[in-house]
Image (cartoon, rainbow, N blue to C red; front, side):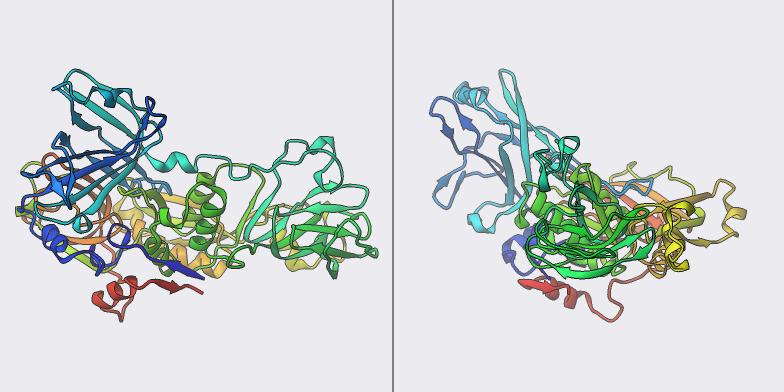
Length: 554
């Protein structure tokens, strides 16, 4: 399984924010925070007078607004602020991205036609560079979607919307027609067809043909399916190309895996359930959270691989090699499924400031740099209220998607199967009772996940308890000379004399103010030990690895 990698803006969570694909002049510009900068604005709104898209360009910071012989008129007033939060204070699995208005100067009346254009839904991007740069030396620092415009006699403002809305859509748009056969009877008309990604235990399939005992568990090609009647495994009679025409003996079942169907030889005596390894389209069967999210987002939304921060997917995969069992989907949105998957590995998702879907596991990693007291705007340092640490943490794993009561088992069902399917989750507990002595408000946290084994739950529980069971502080600072240097999820060192702080902190959120040139960070400081992503790898090795065309994740 390959994750291709994109340059600079999507570099993810390596120790450096800049890779080898970025021009050396741009590297120098990012490093020299005192250097004069320019911004280029580009959008393609719809011109109703010509019934076609039109290019709109503008700039700020150029004495001669010509780049590669192309005119970038100097009427951009500001390059727009961005605010990206990946991790919430409440262990939330979904971040948020917001933008300020980008404003164009129209006071001379020469550009009033901009107000008549249709801007909603149109891509807008802003690039950073300097006087004398070629266009390929500029880097994209903001990419978003216009929601609409505001204007008065002097300014036209472009209102942005976050790309999160692109995933706030039904994950399954295909429904049963109710026409009979494999399309179900009238009772199924309009119901969404089921989906399975990864491995799921004890799901109840949809009966689509009661006469022929045909059931559907996945709308598409699947890897495998094992049938159980009242907790007792039935015997497989193989896979067929036409499930409707297949003949099946009592006590057996056949599958049509290329379309996600199963057929029984006789009605079940108790409750029919399945253990399924799901979708195997495209590059084949996947079971890791990062792989499943990538598959779902590309197959089920309007996003493509170029809209994903692929290095962040790679890093999340390495950070959590624990196996996610999978998801059985009979409704809901893409966003809700992505959130459930990231919640299972102690991670979160959002879109970054250049519009790329980013996922990450909250943990310390290689230090990406140091911010000192000299970099901090006077009076901006603030310790923010956080939730109390947890003293006990319970993580549920090995989800049984259908829970049996005793009457739903046949007598021959094994004790192991009864234990697995008689409750929804198996729980792992990790606790540090001494935390209650220091923190009277210490929490008990219960998280139900999609982790596939109790061993994986034990490992993830220990990691999360070490992070959230420690004393931790949320620090907000506004800085000078740090613009576009860091990304959410990275670890930096904060050296602040006033409170004796010289500690590694995880970047939870970043706000970039392009007008003032200031950057506000939301930081998490914990007293647990610093852990590196690769204990034996140097930061240079990691950056070199992430700069390759693709990486095999297995």
